[in-house]
Amino acid sequence: MASANPQRGQLGFEVDGQRWTMAFGTNALCAIEDEFGLTDITQLEGVLNNKPSLRTIRTLFRLGLTDCHPDMTDMEAGQLIDAVGGLEPSLELVSRAIEQAFPEAAKDGTADPRQPKAGRGTGKPSTPRGAK
Picture 1 (spheres, one colour):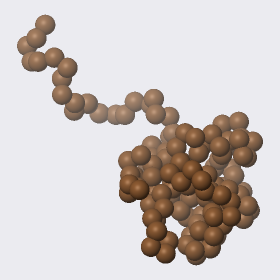
Picture 2 (cartoon, rainbow, N blue to C red; picture 1 turned 90 degrees about the vertical axis):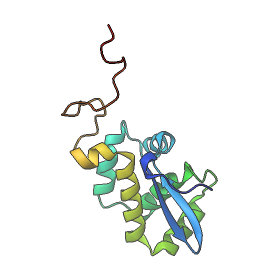
Picture 3 (tube, one colour; picture 1 turned 90 degrees about the horizontal axis):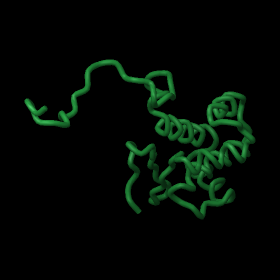
Picture 4 (cartoon, one colour; picture 1 turned 30 degrees about the vertical axis):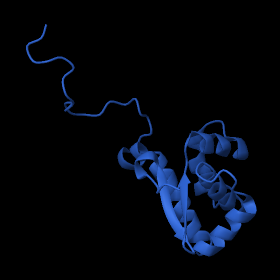
């Protein structure tokens, strides 16, 4: 298995010598919307801030692992939660992985990828200098 790529919203961690990768990609986020009956993913913040139950944390933990570990079950997710130290460390992993899935929201306070960034671009010009 390849190592976690934070540029793609992946968060790697190790339990008993085995590497795991948590990622909240499109499929995991859609599964979260389905599982919790959300009309859009921005409602996830309410789920996390409303004293999530143990079942909610285990479900988020499992769904975060299914992008890279598609056969993950609730039972296995629960065992991993125990192995990483219980609820608090597991919720921290979930929160960090969600932040990596939405880096613009974590950094700038907005999740709108269409919002233009301030400043001049630094990319290579598309035409050579002097071309008409």
